[in-house]
Length: 62
Image 1: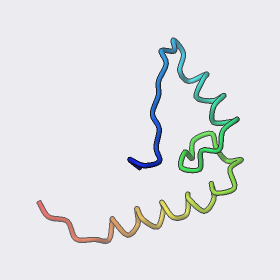
Image 2: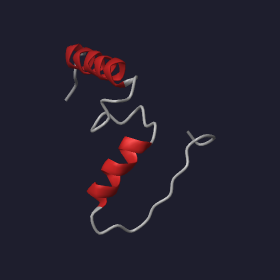
Image 3: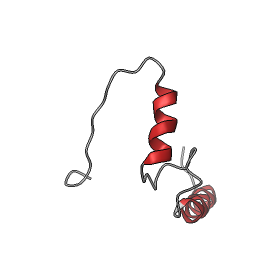
């Protein structure tokens, strides 16, 4: 991520409006919320469900 990720920000009084707009216009494959139109959505959702299930099955320590 250090080589490829970029971060920027702007102040927004209603950020949820901007978020919806950006998600609908950009290719954000790791964001599942409001992103069903992305071709990777179904696959990523399945992978995350499998990871959660595997984590539940692993022993935990206290």
